[in-house]
Length: 152
Image (tube, rainbow, N blue to C red):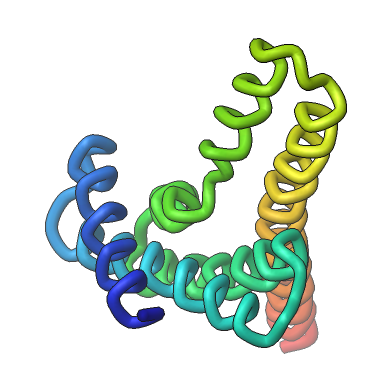
């Protein structure tokens, strides 16, 4: 079942990539990022992790993939990150939250809203975590390279 869901995530991400005007091999690799994001998320859920924890782990995985590939493809990281996020966006959570608000079930709406917010926050934290570490790594690497040049 995970394999089928991963394939469908690839196709959905491909479709959004077309809408986002991504071309050529970047579109293929962006779609692979979407498949990776869903695969890691589904696998994390199989290991009985919570939805927010699974979202965080998935965000870290596809962010690492995106950071590495963006440098190899010489394309902006956001091109890959945004498309890889597509399968994980908690849109249904927002829909059901609003549905519960409209029907008057405030307690259920609050519960769903907090769960949705936790999921979205986990995605954001995962992306920020990897982005920060990557920027710090390349900053230190550049400083060491410049220091080495000055010594010679």
